[in-house]
Length: 110
Image (cartoon, rainbow, N blue to C red; front, side, top):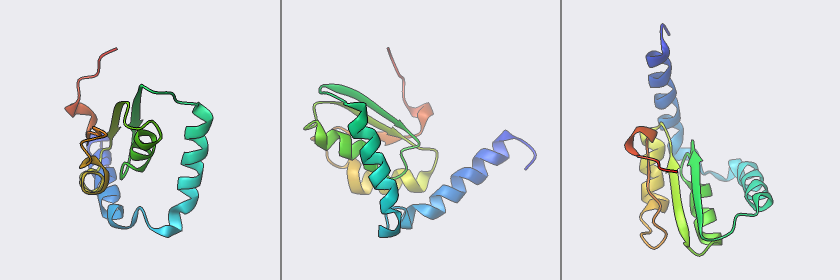
């Protein structure tokens, strides 16, 4: 890879290939650690929750569910495959308003 662009493209392709099996049972230890981290953060509603590198959006959906959808929940990932799977599995729930996409698609405010 000659430059940052090549690296980003290769990284996006790698994670897109992994999207189909990313939520398989064999990755349960990731979920356990994510739950531990989220609980230890003591997030209260309403919350603004941003997950950079959200993968399939599992943590975004988990926090939205914990807080009964009270807040703003955003997941961002570089991989089109991960974004697609996230939208199929988690972002379709308009009750929790969970947008997912690439960072450049969002205008963040303080």
